[in-house]
Length: 116
Picture: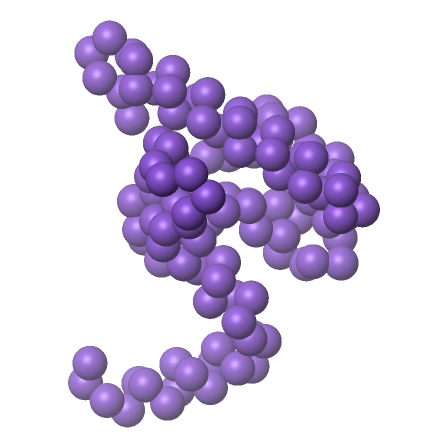
């Protein structure tokens, strides 16, 4: 995650802190419980759901990409707490939020019959 001088790591860490503070502000504005400290969050290099390499550097402002890191609340009713929050890819989080677990299982079952 860093070059020989460590500059990229610093930029990545700054971006992670910036995203953390933005998520905290957003949660407060939306009245969602937020009890995380920055140190509570594990920032993986790869999405634990889909295996995509996560890109932490800032790209075009206001855009999300499938490989962008995303704060996932495992149970949306519980808010952003240490035991309920993970970093996954935006693609995985979008897929999760598009349907229920049953919907996703049906989707997998349907597409499993094809060789794609």
